[in-house]
Amino acid sequence: MVRKMCSKWLGIFVLALCMILSIPAAVYAESGKDGGSLEKYVTIGGKQVRTIFYGDINENKETFADDGKQALVMLPALAVPSPNIYFKPLAQALQDRFHVIIVEPLGYGLSDLTARERTVENINEEIYEVLEQLDVEKCVLLTHSISGIYGLNFVETYPEKVEGFIAIDNTVYDAGLAEALKMEQQYILQAGEEFDAFRNTFPSLQDFKNTIASNPEKYGAVLPQIAGYTYTEQDRAEYLEAYSRSSNETVRNEVSLMEQAANTIIDKKFPADLSVLMMISSDNVDAMPVWKTAHYNQLNFAGGNHEIHIVEGGHYIWYTNLAEIIQKICSWQESLTQDSGNNFVPDPAMAA
Image (tube, rainbow, N blue to C red; front, side, top):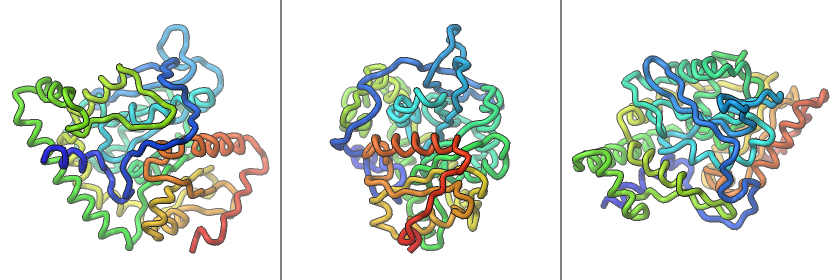
């Protein structure tokens, strides 16, 4: 029963119709590479938000070295136990090109919990304050799944902060997805409540973590399997710590507001003058044709600043196809410096 419950919880966003898989793909991140990282905590409303830097760190180990690279801020999917572990292979693969910052929002990873309502407005206000305290004047936002909802609203509310946007299989709104979204909301809430109830049967969080650590596979706490990439023992310890804290009241409140969050992007598009790279999962497109059209409808191709690609793989595309994701991000970044723009012309079949 516990194994089934934990497997549901790790499924996270079943609209993706995909679990983490082991795949034979070349990757850019070196196995176990751990250099050039820095952990920083930011205080927001009396709560600690954890951020992790990947890239060129200065001699004082306080921030990035001043080498003119763009800041790339990564925001996670709904209810991910550890945004850092989840994004780490992608962050390491991009750290030579960007100053990468992974944000673990309140309730996620090793950040504090909060009783503050998890509305789109509140979450985005906190993200903005994190960037302000980290002295990030402008950044490229990289979002995945539900953080795509927050990101699209963030661009509208704080346009001065965003100079580019990378969307990886973002959550989108469409009437054809509304019923599935509601079912998913109920599914995750139930799984989260079961997980929390199980955790509360232990005398302490440490006892709960020790039990999970004794058999991670049984309790659904196995790290992602990515061919060519090996997590360190420190990563395993961090993941177990974050996993033991997951499915908490902060995250469950966010899940309860999923439908409200989705409604904030009805008929909303990215600004035509903002450079946007959108990559969506072939598995989701095959399973739900509306997944493709709903993403397409968020873009405006007239100015040549928006592009969209279907990438082979599941919802966590960088797990299943890291090499192609990195290649497309690098090509897109290089195009930002070209006066002619991206000149992306979508395949007419994409909108069909």
